[in-house]
Length: 148
Image (tube, rainbow, N blue to C red; front, side):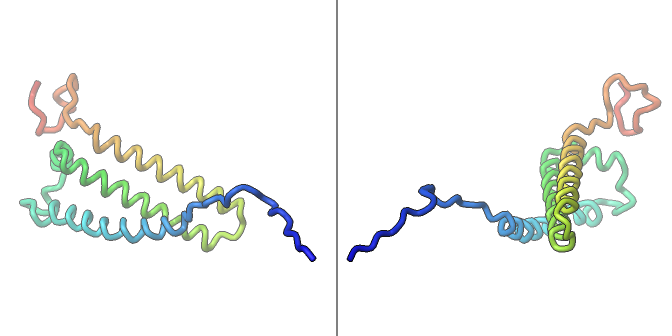
């Protein structure tokens, strides 16, 4: 008596899916730790180590800090990590509390678009801020700009 086994339905190897929930969970933990360091470093440098504390912070102070490549990178990391961290947290809330698939998908698309736009605009401000543009009338320039 011989026994035969039918061929499996699919000859293709199993497709490996990326576990996005796992990577989102890992991102939240890693970015949370980095954000604590970045935020407290930002607060310490602006409030504790600056002469005059909070009263010294004005447009000139911010423009001066953003002229430094170190602070550009620091603020870019802070911006990107915070916005993506917050967007991922909101995505988790949508997954947990929105039961209608169409509404959930719409909210997640709107969330993605808003995070992407804010990251793009914030990054542009960090790297393109010029408080003293050439050709601007002197009466429109801040007081710290050199007279041209």
